[in-house]
Amino acid sequence: MLKPGDTIGILGGGQLARMMALAAAPFGLKCHIFAPEGDNPAFDVSAARTVAGYEDAEALKSFAASVSVVTYEFENVPSTTADILSAHVPVLPAPRALAITQDRFTEKSFIRELGLTVPNFIAVSSLEELEAALMTIGRPSVLKTRRLGYDGKGQAMIREDVSARDAWDAIGHAPAILEAFVPFEREVSVVAARSLAGECVAYDVCENRHKHHILDKTLLPAAVSPRTEAHAKAAAQKIAEALGYVGVFAVEFFVAGSGDQEVLLVNEIAPRVHNSGHWTLGGAETSQFEQHIRAVSGWPLGSVKRLGRIEMENLIGDDVARWADLLAEPGLIIELYGKREARPGRKMGHITRVIR
Ligand code: AMP
Image (cartoon, rainbow, N blue to C red; front, top):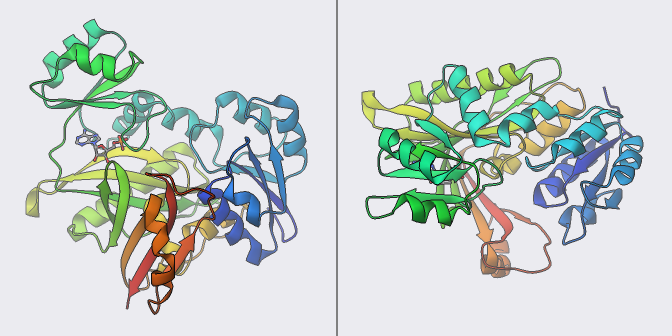
C-alpha cells in the first residue's frame, strides 16, 4: 500500500497521464513520467521525468527503482517493457490485461468465453482467409487489424461494392479480424474500477457520439433501459474479475435494437482511464483519475455518484481556440491539456457541463 510522499510511475506523457498526476497531487503522491521524446503535457505537472524509448532496458530499470508502483496511460505498452518493469516493481493493471487487450482476436475471444455477446468475428491472415471469412460473416462487415488500431485507424468497411482485395490492401496486409457490422442504435461505455482488495465500482453508463471516428461528446444518462444499464455494469465487473484487474478501465458497447429488443454487444476493453470518463472530473464525486490513483495505490475506492445530467465535449484541433469564450460560461468545467500545437484531430482539451 502506498502512502503520501510515495511516487507513482506512469508510462506515457499525454493528457491521461497529466490528469492522473494532477489527481495524485492532493494525496501528497508524486508522479514520475516515463515517455519518449515529444510533446508530453504530463511533464508540466509531475515531479520527475525520464525521456527514453519504451525499449530502453537501462532507463526502465532506473525508472522502476525510483517508484513504488508503475501504471500506464495507453494499452500498447510493449510486453517486453512490462516484463522488465514487473521484475522490479508492481505494474498495475497487471501486464496480462495488456496482453489480452492489445490483440483484438485475443480480446474478443476472452470476452466471448466469459459469456458476453460480441459481434461475430473470424481471424484472417491472408487474402484467401479473408475471402473465406466473408462467406461466413457476409457484408457489410468490418476488417480490423489485430494490433495497434484506434479511433478507426487500421479498419476497412467491406460493403457490397468493396472487394476483399481492396479491403486487404487498405489495412496493409496485417493480421486482422473480420467482424460482422452491427447496425447499432447508439454507442455506450462503462467506466469502472477494481481495487487491490477486489472491490468493484462502475460509473453510470455513458452515451458516446463520434465525429470522424474520434469521440466528440459523452452524454449521461445514456438513453438505454434500466435493464441494459445494469447489464453493462455487470459485464464490466465480470471482465474485471476475470482479469484480476486493478485500476480504472472502460468497456465500449454497441446497443442494437430498442425497447424489449435492446441488446448489448461488447466492442472493446480499454485497460486505462478513458476519454468517455472525462466527465467524472467535476461530474462525479470521485474522478476516474483519482479512482485510478486510489486503486493502484492499494487504497479503497471513492464514490462513483454522478452529480447531475452530463454533457462532455472534446476540444479537438482548433476547437481549443474557443477557450476565452468558454471561460465566460458560469459553472463550465474546462480542462486544457497544455499541448503545444493544435493539429487537426488532436485532442486539446475537454469541457463538461453538469446540469443539476
Ligand atoms: P473500434 O476501433 O473497434 O472501437 O471502432 C471504431 C468505430 O468504428 C466504433 O466506435 C464504431 O463506430 C465503428 N465500428 C467498429 N466496429 C463496428 C462494427 N462491428 N459494426 C458497426 N460499427 C463498427
